[in-house]
Image (cartoon, rainbow, N blue to C red; front, side, top):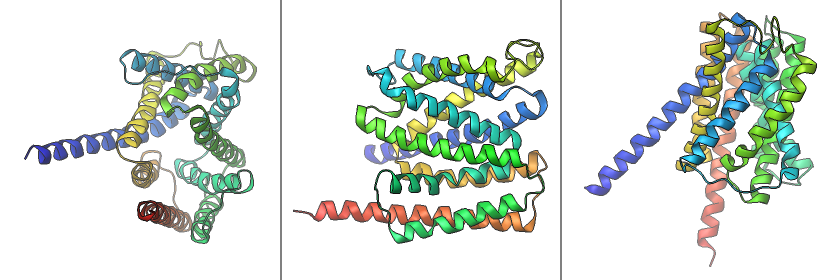
Length: 313
């Protein structure tokens, strides 16, 4: 009976963790879009706030013994910290200049780009059926972008740059974790302050610092509270992702991500009145089918690999 109670309690904790991640992940997208649309807060400045709050949050976590920091050579993290800046800045610029639907769908292109990078630069091979799932994903994204009545060429450029830098960052994070033998929180503990310092130097060259629109400008109390809340929620997203992967598996997190994908798309059309044509809907459905097929095949291959390892004498 005790073991059954423990399993129920464990499942309840996992369900609570997934629900929390769902709420904060959706909230950060809508909150950032609200800040851009209704307050006009600068993109890089908002990203800087996110990085600083994330580092402070991680500092508190390590003081509470949630994780143990590991001494790492900063020279090996410079490129990673720079790509961390780039992926967050370009992703936020994509959100700022596109509808939520186009922003969310463009992020799905990260999967094909990661596979291309790993194939051509790291000589990693993928099965034919995995490669074939990239066709509906790509076609769906193109369909949605082409028929988006709020299509913005600059937004498309930011979305493309965001996908490229995000893909590079994700590949490099995996390589660095393996090379340095650290987990994601230990790595982020060093990345966040380094990326904050880089943005602190870059912000004055691209955005006003003081005066109208500057990070230290005459913002209303409500705008400042929204920005601070955005930073706290961004940290909670990172923390909940780490907890879910640590307590379940990356596959569970990705499967759950498909649900968030659909909820975020629907929320964008409802909250921000983004128009949705039939062809856009077809593109969304096409991309979602490709993502689900990719996850199914990837899971099957991982299970097959585990079975072979178990059967090996």
